[in-house]
Image (cartoon, rainbow, N blue to C red; front, top):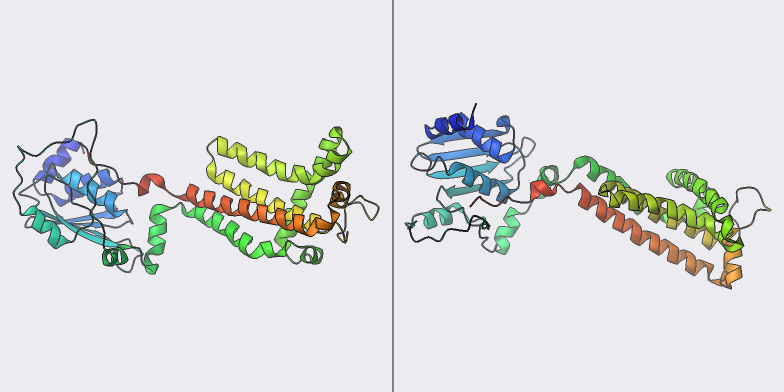
Length: 339
C-alpha cells in the first residue's frame, strides 16, 4: 500500500494503518507492533526491545501528520516476548513539541495543558535540527529506569551483536581462567589443553622466524623465533583494523597478547633450562643465549613477568575492542526529529 493511502486510512482512525506507519518509522516488522485507539488515547505495544529515547522521538514525529483530535494522548509500552515485565512505559500528549526526556505521564499532561502560541514560537533552522531537551534524572528515576537483572538479556539483544558478544566472552573467559597456566610447571605438565594447542600453532611461526631472521646476524637469528611469533598476529590484527574489520582485529590482538604469555614461559626458563626443546638436548636455548649475551641472565624471572604483564594489557585491550565492535551503534543512538 502506498504511503499516502496509509496516511489517509490512519487519519480515519484505522489502527492497522497507524501500526504500519509506525513499523516503517521504527524499522520493525508489523507483527512486532500492536496499536489500539479508543477515545483519543492511542496505546502502542512494542514487541521488541527498543531504546527508549529513539522510540519516543520517532513515534511522536510519525504521529504528527495524524494529529488531534483523533489522537490526544499516546502510551508506549515496550514488552518483548521473553521479558516477564515491560522494559519501560511512557505516556505523553500528542503536542507539536516532542516530549521532554523521560518525564512521567502526569508531568507531561500538565505541560500539555498550557496553550502554545505557534505564531510566536521560534522554529529551528532546517539546516540545524534540534535534539529534544533532556531533563536531569533523579537518583530514584535512574534506579527505576536502568535495566534490571531480569531485563539484561533483552537489553543485550537490542544493543549488541549476540554472536560477536558470545565469541569475545569466550576469549575473555579463557584469559581469566587460562592465563594462570602460563608458567614453566603447568606447561611441562600440559594440563591446559587449549594452551598446548595454541602453543603448537605458535611454534610453527616461532621456527619460521629463526629461518627468516638468520639473514640479519646470529643475535637476530636466535631472537627471530620469539619475535616472529608475536609479529605475525600483530600484522594480522593491524591489517584487519586498517580495513575496518574491527572485531577480527580484536580476536587477532588477543592472539598477540597470548603470544607474549607464551614467550614469557620461555624467558623464565632461561636459567633452569628445564623445558623440552624441539630437536633434543643439544638444541640451543634461545633465551638462555640471548640473556647471557646481554648480561641479564639473572633477571630472567623479572623479564618473563614483564612480558606476561605486557601480554595481559594487550589481551584486555583486545576484549575492550571486541565488546565495542559488538555494540550496535546505529540502533542505540536516537534519531533527532526532522525540522
